[in-house]
Image (cartoon, rainbow, N blue to C red; front, side, top):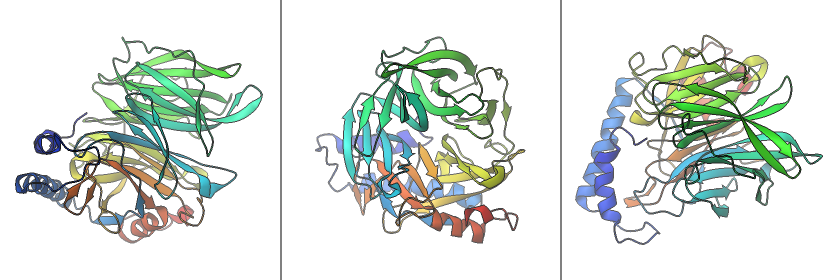
Length: 395
C-alpha cells in the first residue's frame, strides 16, 4: 500500500522522472527538494514526538533495482544463509515492477531474474526433494496471481514450483505479503500469502519428483491489507502486521483455527512510536525462546521491537540514519539473521528496503540497506530500557 504521505512526494518525483533514463541520475528542482524535505521533517517530528532516540547507520547498500528514481519498485528482502561458506550467503530482493535480484553481502547484484511483479520473498532450509535436502525460496507473483518456488544455491535460483497454482481469488484477490513456515513436529513446509483485502491463504509444499506442488490447506482473514508477515518455526506462531491495525498472532499449524489476538501496543492508537503503515516483519531468534519481533513503521521511518515471548511487550524503536550510505525512509520489507556471516557481519545482518534512495541531492532507484547487527546490538544495549540480561544472548 502507498505510504501515508507518499502521494504528496511522489507527484513531484514522478513528474521529475518523466523522460529520465533508467539510471535515475540527475539533479532535482528546488520544488522537488522542498517537497521531500517537508516530508522528511514531518516524519522526523513524529519520531521525535514518540521519543525515538536510538539511531544506527547502515554498513552497506545493494545496487539499485532496474527502475527509475521515484518509482516504488524495490519491496522485500530475504537472507539466504550459506551453511558451507557463510561469507557467500546471499540477499534476495524483490522488484515489484520486474522480478527478483540476488546480491552478495557487499550489495553487488549477481543475478537478476525478470519474472514479473514479484512482491514478497522468503526462504526455508532442508526441504526433501527427489532424495536430497534443498533450500527453497518462495515469492508472491502479482502478475500471475500465484506463488513461485525455487531452489537456491550461491550461484543460482532454479524454479521448481510447477505447475503454478493459482490462488483462490475469494481469499487472495492480489498477492502481496508472503512468508514461509516449517512445522517441526512433522517437518512439513508451508507458504502464507496475503492479499490486498486482508485475506490470507496457507499452502503446503509437496514434493513431486523434481518439482514442488502447492496444496491449499487454510484461509485466514483480517480487516484490511496485511503485507508484513512472518512465521516463528520454533514457537509455531504466525504474525501478521495489519498496515493500519496492529500485529495479529495466529497459530501457524494448518489445524490451528482462524482466531487471532492483537499484540499489546502494536497499534498506532495505543503507541505513538508506530505510524501507519506497518509493513516489514521478521523474527530475531534468541536462545531459550528469547528474541524479538521487528516491524517497520513507515510513517515515521522507524523500526519497533516486541518481545518474542508472550505477552510480547513493546521494547522500543530505532531509526537508520545517514552515515557511510544514506539513511532509510518508508521501509516496506525487511529481513534479519543473527548467525555469523563471515568477517563483514560476524553477528548477523539486518536488511531493509529503502523507500528514498539518494546520493547527496540526486535521486536513485530504490534499493536495500545492510545493517551490521554488532552496531544494532550496541545501540540497543546502550539506549533501550530493557531488563539487564535481556540482550545477553546477542553477545
